[in-house]
Length: 129
Image (cartoon, rainbow, N blue to C red; front, top):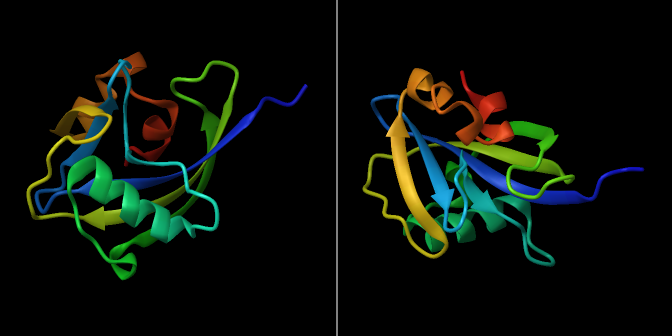
């Protein structure tokens, strides 16, 4: 039986110093890239622009999002589901703040992210440099 699919967009956000931004949603213990589910009729870029504004108070243009690729992994917080993610890269110099369903955010090196072990979402593991 094929597992149910969750389609999302995600931002591989780094700061000018190269550190990676990870977020943890309220009620979960796993860290992941910011992003979310596109609404009906939304392009992946438009969905990510909306999600970044809602989750981080970050205003970006669609043109600022550099495509990384499409990835398939296990879902982080929905057991038995497959995650299909369109991922875009973004370098951010301005401050960000946890908003909406985001409980916590962390700027970390690749090694610090990897050290989160099982607390790092499967997609985030795939995206570590």
